[in-house]
Image (cartoon, rainbow, N blue to C red):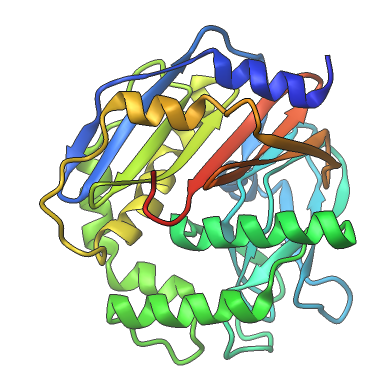
Length: 311
Protein backbone atom coordinates (compact mmCIF):
# COMPACT_ATOMS: atom_id res chain seq x y z
CA UNK A 1 0.00 0.00 0.00
CA UNK A 2 1.46 3.38 -1.00
CA UNK A 3 1.16 6.61 0.98
CA UNK A 4 -1.79 7.85 -1.08
CA UNK A 5 -3.66 4.63 -0.26
CA UNK A 6 -2.95 5.12 3.45
CA UNK A 7 -4.50 8.59 3.20
CA UNK A 8 -7.61 7.31 1.39
CA UNK A 9 -8.07 4.51 3.94
CA UNK A 10 -7.69 6.98 6.81
CA UNK A 11 -10.33 9.33 5.41
CA UNK A 12 -12.60 6.40 4.67
CA UNK A 13 -12.66 5.40 8.35
CA UNK A 14 -13.99 8.72 9.65
CA UNK A 15 -17.40 9.65 11.05
CA UNK A 16 -18.76 13.13 11.81
CA UNK A 17 -20.74 14.08 14.92
CA UNK A 18 -23.15 16.88 15.72
CA UNK A 19 -21.47 20.29 16.00
CA UNK A 20 -20.59 22.32 19.05
CA UNK A 21 -21.67 25.91 18.43
CA UNK A 22 -20.77 29.35 19.73
CA UNK A 23 -21.68 32.54 17.91
CA UNK A 24 -20.65 32.12 14.25
CA UNK A 25 -18.41 29.09 14.77
CA UNK A 26 -19.51 25.45 14.58
CA UNK A 27 -17.06 22.64 15.37
CA UNK A 28 -17.81 19.06 14.34
CA UNK A 29 -16.06 16.22 16.21
CA UNK A 30 -14.55 13.63 13.89
CA UNK A 31 -13.85 10.08 15.02
CA UNK A 32 -12.22 7.15 13.30
CA UNK A 33 -12.29 3.38 13.29
CA UNK A 34 -8.71 3.08 14.50
CA UNK A 35 -5.77 5.15 15.66
CA UNK A 36 -2.03 4.94 15.05
CA UNK A 37 0.47 5.06 17.93
CA UNK A 38 2.40 8.27 17.24
CA UNK A 39 4.45 9.51 20.19
CA UNK A 40 5.70 13.09 19.99
CA UNK A 41 5.86 16.47 21.67
CA UNK A 42 4.07 19.49 20.25
CA UNK A 43 5.95 22.62 19.25
CA UNK A 44 4.80 24.44 22.40
CA UNK A 45 5.77 21.54 24.66
CA UNK A 46 9.25 21.16 23.15
CA UNK A 47 9.97 24.90 23.28
CA UNK A 48 8.75 25.05 26.90
CA UNK A 49 11.10 22.19 27.82
CA UNK A 50 14.01 23.98 26.20
CA UNK A 51 14.72 21.01 23.92
CA UNK A 52 13.69 22.69 20.65
CA UNK A 53 15.42 25.79 19.35
CA UNK A 54 14.40 27.76 16.25
CA UNK A 55 16.29 30.63 14.67
CA UNK A 56 17.58 32.15 11.47
CA UNK A 57 19.56 30.22 8.87
CA UNK A 58 22.95 31.97 8.93
CA UNK A 59 22.46 35.71 8.56
CA UNK A 60 18.79 35.09 7.79
CA UNK A 61 16.63 34.27 4.78
CA UNK A 62 12.88 34.98 4.69
CA UNK A 63 11.55 31.56 3.52
CA UNK A 64 13.62 29.35 5.85
CA UNK A 65 14.32 28.80 9.54
CA UNK A 66 16.76 26.47 11.28
CA UNK A 67 15.23 24.05 13.77
CA UNK A 68 17.37 22.12 16.28
CA UNK A 69 15.78 19.30 18.29
CA UNK A 70 18.18 18.67 21.16
CA UNK A 71 15.89 16.19 22.92
CA UNK A 72 15.29 12.49 22.34
CA UNK A 73 11.55 12.88 21.64
CA UNK A 74 10.12 13.47 18.22
CA UNK A 75 8.44 16.85 17.80
CA UNK A 76 5.32 17.57 15.73
CA UNK A 77 4.88 21.03 14.19
CA UNK A 78 1.51 21.97 12.68
CA UNK A 79 1.17 23.72 9.34
CA UNK A 80 0.46 27.40 10.01
CA UNK A 81 1.94 27.54 13.52
CA UNK A 82 3.66 30.85 14.13
CA UNK A 83 7.19 31.36 15.41
CA UNK A 84 7.82 34.83 16.84
CA UNK A 85 11.13 36.64 17.20
CA UNK A 86 14.50 36.56 15.41
CA UNK A 87 14.45 38.97 12.43
CA UNK A 88 10.72 38.61 11.71
CA UNK A 89 7.75 36.41 12.62
CA UNK A 90 7.07 33.38 10.38
CA UNK A 91 4.48 30.62 9.98
CA UNK A 92 5.23 27.04 8.95
CA UNK A 93 4.46 26.11 5.34
CA UNK A 94 3.67 22.47 6.10
CA UNK A 95 3.22 20.05 8.98
CA UNK A 96 6.30 18.08 9.93
CA UNK A 97 7.59 15.50 12.36
CA UNK A 98 11.16 16.01 13.52
CA UNK A 99 13.31 13.16 14.80
CA UNK A 100 15.09 13.46 18.14
CA UNK A 101 18.58 14.95 18.02
CA UNK A 102 17.99 16.36 14.53
CA UNK A 103 18.74 19.70 12.87
CA UNK A 104 16.51 20.74 10.02
CA UNK A 105 15.92 23.69 7.72
CA UNK A 106 12.16 24.25 7.53
CA UNK A 107 10.07 26.19 4.94
CA UNK A 108 8.16 29.19 6.30
CA UNK A 109 6.31 32.34 5.26
CA UNK A 110 6.77 35.78 6.79
CA UNK A 111 3.75 37.28 8.59
CA UNK A 112 5.48 40.48 9.74
CA UNK A 113 6.25 42.49 6.65
CA UNK A 114 7.57 45.61 8.38
CA UNK A 115 10.53 44.17 10.32
CA UNK A 116 13.86 42.62 9.35
CA UNK A 117 16.04 43.00 12.43
CA UNK A 118 16.73 41.33 15.76
CA UNK A 119 14.75 43.21 18.41
CA UNK A 120 14.42 40.71 21.27
CA UNK A 121 17.12 38.09 20.90
CA UNK A 122 17.88 35.48 18.28
CA UNK A 123 15.75 32.60 19.58
CA UNK A 124 12.12 32.25 18.48
CA UNK A 125 9.14 31.29 20.60
CA UNK A 126 5.99 29.42 19.69
CA UNK A 127 2.92 31.60 19.21
CA UNK A 128 -0.53 31.25 17.62
CA UNK A 129 -1.81 29.07 14.79
CA UNK A 130 -2.71 31.15 11.74
CA UNK A 131 -6.37 31.28 10.75
CA UNK A 132 -8.01 29.01 8.13
CA UNK A 133 -8.30 31.77 5.51
CA UNK A 134 -4.53 32.18 5.37
CA UNK A 135 -3.75 28.49 5.84
CA UNK A 136 -6.01 27.55 2.93
CA UNK A 137 -4.54 30.13 0.55
CA UNK A 138 -1.03 29.08 1.51
CA UNK A 139 -1.80 25.38 1.10
CA UNK A 140 -2.85 25.99 -2.51
CA UNK A 141 0.29 28.05 -3.14
CA UNK A 142 2.57 25.37 -1.66
CA UNK A 143 0.88 22.63 -3.68
CA UNK A 144 1.53 24.56 -6.88
CA UNK A 145 5.15 25.22 -5.87
CA UNK A 146 5.72 21.52 -5.18
CA UNK A 147 4.27 20.56 -8.55
CA UNK A 148 6.25 23.12 -10.54
CA UNK A 149 9.46 23.63 -8.56
CA UNK A 150 9.61 20.81 -6.02
CA UNK A 151 9.77 23.26 -3.11
CA UNK A 152 7.50 24.06 -0.14
CA UNK A 153 7.37 27.75 -1.04
CA UNK A 154 4.41 30.08 -0.68
CA UNK A 155 3.66 33.24 -2.65
CA UNK A 156 5.17 35.61 -0.10
CA UNK A 157 3.70 38.75 -1.65
CA UNK A 158 0.20 37.22 -1.48
CA UNK A 159 0.75 36.16 2.14
CA UNK A 160 1.67 39.74 3.07
CA UNK A 161 -1.39 41.09 1.26
CA UNK A 162 -3.61 38.62 3.10
CA UNK A 163 -2.13 39.61 6.47
CA UNK A 164 -2.63 43.31 5.72
CA UNK A 165 -6.29 42.71 4.81
CA UNK A 166 -6.82 40.61 7.91
CA UNK A 167 -5.34 43.21 10.25
CA UNK A 168 -7.57 45.86 8.66
CA UNK A 169 -10.72 43.74 9.04
CA UNK A 170 -9.81 42.99 12.67
CA UNK A 171 -9.25 46.66 13.46
CA UNK A 172 -5.73 45.81 14.64
CA UNK A 173 -2.95 48.42 14.48
CA UNK A 174 0.54 46.98 13.95
CA UNK A 175 3.68 49.05 13.36
CA UNK A 176 5.35 46.08 11.65
CA UNK A 177 2.23 44.56 10.01
CA UNK A 178 2.50 41.56 12.33
CA UNK A 179 -0.28 38.96 12.22
CA UNK A 180 0.32 38.28 15.93
CA UNK A 181 -1.03 41.75 16.71
CA UNK A 182 -4.39 40.68 15.29
CA UNK A 183 -4.52 37.78 17.75
CA UNK A 184 -3.47 40.01 20.63
CA UNK A 185 -6.10 42.62 19.72
CA UNK A 186 -8.81 39.98 20.21
CA UNK A 187 -7.20 37.77 22.85
CA UNK A 188 -10.15 37.93 25.27
CA UNK A 189 -12.68 37.00 22.58
CA UNK A 190 -10.55 34.10 21.33
CA UNK A 191 -10.17 32.76 24.86
CA UNK A 192 -13.95 32.89 25.26
CA UNK A 193 -14.42 30.69 22.19
CA UNK A 194 -11.96 28.14 23.60
CA UNK A 195 -13.73 28.17 26.97
CA UNK A 196 -17.18 27.67 25.38
CA UNK A 197 -16.10 24.93 22.98
CA UNK A 198 -14.41 22.07 24.89
CA UNK A 199 -12.51 19.32 23.11
CA UNK A 200 -14.80 16.31 22.42
CA UNK A 201 -13.67 13.12 24.13
CA UNK A 202 -12.10 10.57 21.83
CA UNK A 203 -12.15 12.72 18.70
CA UNK A 204 -9.33 12.40 16.18
CA UNK A 205 -10.10 15.71 14.57
CA UNK A 206 -12.42 18.62 14.03
CA UNK A 207 -14.16 20.36 11.13
CA UNK A 208 -14.87 24.08 11.39
CA UNK A 209 -17.78 25.90 9.78
CA UNK A 210 -17.69 29.68 9.95
CA UNK A 211 -20.76 31.87 9.40
CA UNK A 212 -22.64 28.90 8.00
CA UNK A 213 -19.98 27.69 5.57
CA UNK A 214 -17.49 24.82 5.80
CA UNK A 215 -13.99 26.21 6.24
CA UNK A 216 -11.46 23.54 7.18
CA UNK A 217 -10.71 20.18 8.75
CA UNK A 218 -7.80 19.16 11.00
CA UNK A 219 -7.20 15.47 11.75
CA UNK A 220 -4.58 13.69 13.84
CA UNK A 221 -3.26 10.18 14.37
CA UNK A 222 -4.39 10.02 18.00
CA UNK A 223 -7.02 11.86 20.09
CA UNK A 224 -4.39 12.99 22.62
CA UNK A 225 -2.64 15.08 19.97
CA UNK A 226 -5.89 16.85 19.07
CA UNK A 227 -6.56 17.51 22.77
CA UNK A 228 -3.13 19.07 23.31
CA UNK A 229 -3.56 21.37 20.30
CA UNK A 230 -7.26 22.09 20.86
CA UNK A 231 -7.12 25.60 22.34
CA UNK A 232 -4.68 26.73 19.64
CA UNK A 233 -6.92 25.30 16.91
CA UNK A 234 -10.10 26.89 18.30
CA UNK A 235 -8.43 30.30 18.60
CA UNK A 236 -7.31 30.11 14.98
CA UNK A 237 -10.81 29.23 13.74
CA UNK A 238 -12.31 31.94 15.94
CA UNK A 239 -10.04 34.59 14.43
CA UNK A 240 -11.87 34.06 11.14
CA UNK A 241 -15.26 33.78 12.85
CA UNK A 242 -15.09 37.10 14.70
CA UNK A 243 -14.84 39.17 11.52
CA UNK A 244 -16.87 36.92 9.20
CA UNK A 245 -20.02 38.36 7.59
CA UNK A 246 -23.01 37.78 9.85
CA UNK A 247 -25.44 35.36 8.25
CA UNK A 248 -28.63 33.77 9.51
CA UNK A 249 -27.82 30.51 7.70
CA UNK A 250 -27.53 27.35 9.75
CA UNK A 251 -24.17 25.56 9.65
CA UNK A 252 -23.89 22.56 7.31
CA UNK A 253 -25.36 19.23 8.37
CA UNK A 254 -22.83 16.61 9.54
CA UNK A 255 -23.57 14.71 6.32
CA UNK A 256 -22.23 17.64 4.29
CA UNK A 257 -18.99 17.60 6.28
CA UNK A 258 -18.78 13.83 5.76
CA UNK A 259 -18.98 14.37 1.99
CA UNK A 260 -16.04 16.77 2.24
CA UNK A 261 -14.05 14.03 4.01
CA UNK A 262 -15.00 11.29 1.57
CA UNK A 263 -12.40 12.28 -1.07
CA UNK A 264 -14.06 11.87 -4.44
CA UNK A 265 -12.88 9.06 -6.70
CA UNK A 266 -11.27 11.63 -9.01
CA UNK A 267 -9.43 13.34 -6.12
CA UNK A 268 -5.79 13.97 -7.00
CA UNK A 269 -3.32 12.78 -4.36
CA UNK A 270 0.38 13.49 -4.98
CA UNK A 271 3.23 12.39 -2.70
CA UNK A 272 6.33 14.48 -1.99
CA UNK A 273 9.25 13.98 0.39
CA UNK A 274 8.44 15.86 3.60
CA UNK A 275 10.82 18.09 5.50
CA UNK A 276 11.72 15.90 8.46
CA UNK A 277 10.20 12.42 8.64
CA UNK A 278 7.78 10.81 6.23
CA UNK A 279 5.91 11.83 3.10
CA UNK A 280 3.63 14.78 2.43
CA UNK A 281 0.58 13.86 0.34
CA UNK A 282 -1.05 16.89 -1.26
CA UNK A 283 -4.80 16.59 -1.87
CA UNK A 284 -6.98 18.27 -4.49
CA UNK A 285 -10.63 17.26 -4.81
CA UNK A 286 -12.97 19.68 -6.56
CA UNK A 287 -13.02 22.86 -4.48
CA UNK A 288 -11.18 21.25 -1.59
CA UNK A 289 -7.41 21.39 -1.16
CA UNK A 290 -5.18 20.07 1.61
CA UNK A 291 -2.41 17.73 2.64
CA UNK A 292 -1.53 14.79 4.86
CA UNK A 293 1.72 13.95 6.62
CA UNK A 294 2.29 10.18 6.50
CA UNK A 295 5.02 8.54 8.58
CA UNK A 296 5.49 4.75 8.46
CA UNK A 297 1.96 4.31 7.11
CA UNK A 298 0.32 6.47 9.81
CA UNK A 299 -1.41 9.77 9.00
CA UNK A 300 0.10 12.03 11.65
CA UNK A 301 -1.87 15.09 10.52
CA UNK A 302 -4.27 15.84 7.68
CA UNK A 303 -5.89 19.13 6.73
CA UNK A 304 -8.52 20.14 4.22
CA UNK A 305 -9.66 23.64 3.22
CA UNK A 306 -12.86 24.53 1.37
CA UNK A 307 -12.59 27.26 -1.24
CA UNK A 308 -15.23 29.52 -2.69
CA UNK A 309 -18.62 29.04 -1.05
CA UNK A 310 -17.37 26.23 1.18
CA UNK A 311 -19.44 23.51 -0.51
